[in-house]
Image 1 (spheres, rainbow, N blue to C red):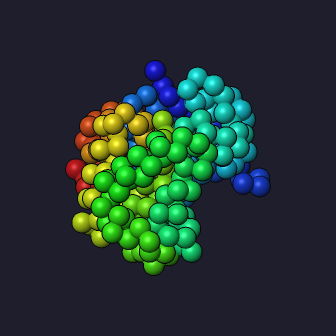
Image 2 (image 1 turned 90 degrees about the vertical axis):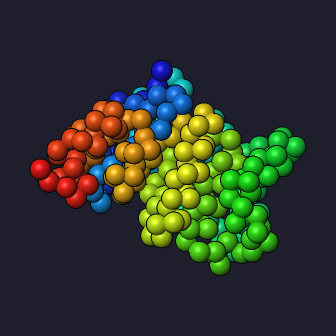
Length: 238
């Protein structure tokens, strides 16, 4: 069963269609990636799913119900969380205050406290910096914080937009180890990632997006050896 289903999703900026009628499914409990070049429409797709852009209600179904046009905070309450491109942490707030913001829709104080401890166990570096202003963290630490903040809402579906962008290789490895750990706990993940090889290696299924359209899809292991994907996104040629 698909937890997330896009059916002929269209998103326009002014008179320009950035997403031109795509179909996409994310099965419950799976990690699915969406890859493509800059400007393909990947981030726009995630923003539409997260309720940040106007779309037709039936174009997006989450947990069997249409959610197109639903306000973002309502989607967070229903278990859908976005980690945006560029992290979007609250720079003037401390690490702990940022994590607390992720739980703003919750009232179960004891469980929130337990989830805060879990966030620190996933990212020990954040525990060391819990009283530090988020704006003074490194890029990798801010990415950890953005993911930890999203997890504080206890999402059923986690949308990740370019989590490796601008990070050193060792930090990328740590971030993706955590993403895999979260997926193994049963959180469904839709991952947008510029590093196509890494995205396909960790995913069960993948979609390739070009100029607002899905041009290829299938098991990630098949896309890894697809000649078109290898030539266009993996830097390889037959």
